[in-house]
Length: 384
Image 1 (spheres, rainbow, N blue to C red):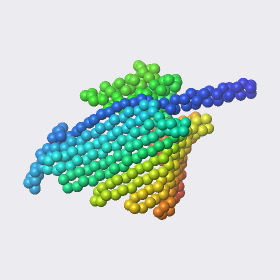
Image 2: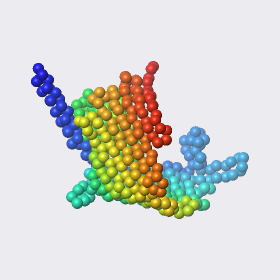
Image 3: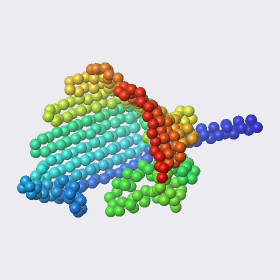
């Protein structure tokens, strides 16, 4: 009898390890994604009835009866977004701008972008380089200001977002579908292509939403249960368990990064920073303990002052088989070495427990350099 029990335990443990290894094999899943859109709003005042004209501050023609002033303005706001990702590159561009012409004249433009290439070979090791930044320009008939923040880096390794893998697996489990790596990959692909579907120009947005959920149901192998898939987010149990893995990543990377800062307001100013950055995330204890950590150090220059700073942070999440409870802890440490020495820290931990689907509780401790020691607790309950 004891031998039989031992055999069963070994088989169960082996199944657990095989399950973990099975999904670890798709942690590096990259879904090729490409989309872009441009929206322009505004024009000759406002449209849409009394409520719009009451609250809109840029009407085409506006006469103030009390002061006798007359204003005439034409304004427009635009937003542009483009994203392209494949196995080795990632390009993310965004820009927002506004123009006003008339009694009041002005222009505002805020572009930002980042490009990363993971095809770099550094002495036989897989590396990457990245470049980008953002800017802000404001101009009117009386003033001109701008800010420019370019950045660049080169490094080794790569981190992957695995939250959607756990989200897909969990959705299928709650829907009574047996998850497999192939099905999980198919569902994650649908998740990642939501921006592609939702950014289309259409006169009936509901069609895009229905297409998205139908694709998800098809990927799970339950094409006739679209309503069940659409409403899974309304399950308190699903939402509680999903919260345990939100934002999880896997892998490591380290790089040397440099940033510049050019600004002109009343006067012109110049600054910047450079230094190493590293991060790591993964699982231990047969995937029951998730961890992530990051650290950076930098030499900074601003307003003729040189500084030396270091920062470190991390998070640990304990994921027991019983989803009714879980524990998390986070820590952040900030150190200024020069020109003045200062140490800041914030360490906290909390336990979460689900008494029933309508009663969620938590309690924890916090220690930081300002408030000192804090005990906190709370929860959410629906009683009727």
